[in-house]
Length: 422
Image (cartoon, rainbow, N blue to C red; front, side, top):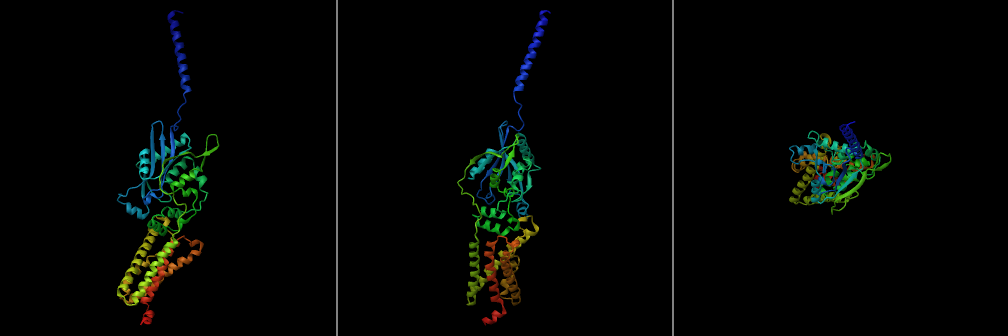
């Protein structure tokens, strides 16, 4: 073997040894697992000042360590300037959308609003983290980002919940949908709106029997803070087969000085009843003064009685329309229609004429007694299990006024009372 061949063989052996060493070094470096670079958090925002902020908010935050990206996916977007915003609101078909935002910018928005923000790191496998990211990105596509909002069933809290539940193959629902909470959609709505008396009254009047079902933990997660709380108790099965908590750790990203939410809904029945008896007393007082001959009080009685009837009648008409021609399903089956019904609108229009036109008086008395009778009926129907809607506040407000109004109409327009006064 000549010197040249020896060199060639030596070079080949050296090359082979180098290749083996390189392969050994390469095999010693673990192959990155897709999704391992991701961390998935559930973000929960506390209540704010605006009425649509009272219930809190939810987002999914995905941290990508490889790309140094933090995206927060937000399902709570709507635009007051949409040309059909009011029409959709009235029909119960609000159009919301979702999108991904830079997480720090989104967090700063809530800090500026002085709202608390929490983040819960979720115990998901790399594959599940990728799936969450994929579902959120697909949802954020222009053709998918819009959805029909429902304040209890399809909102900014239920949609993130459903995505996480989907990647867990229904694990969240399986652990929460049979655990009852002794709360209702009504009780949660009223406790969160308690400090806004007008919104509270509107919700108490608008919600029907569908809002009074006993909620499971799964249903209660329409509220972001309840979603946060219930996920703390959910467990997941890991590779070894043992169960571990879904929530790995929690971060307090922002703290608010706002008072804590009410635990239960308040009961303003006494206050509503005092207000109702106050209006009823005013009607009786004006009636007494008008009988004594004060013409101005008769005019004032006519005006106040008509005003009550028109306002109450319009409320009843709105309730009937919401019940029959909109998608506001939680306003259906509403016993408040017995307290404030559309007949009052007709009564309010006819009362001024009854003071001058004799043939209108019988109709006015009939309407007044019908409205009062329906109101009293609604009160007594409360003893029946199927008709026990918790609307005592509306009954306390409306029933005294309806009864007093019926008495006023009878006293002023009844021929028997007219002869007695003569």
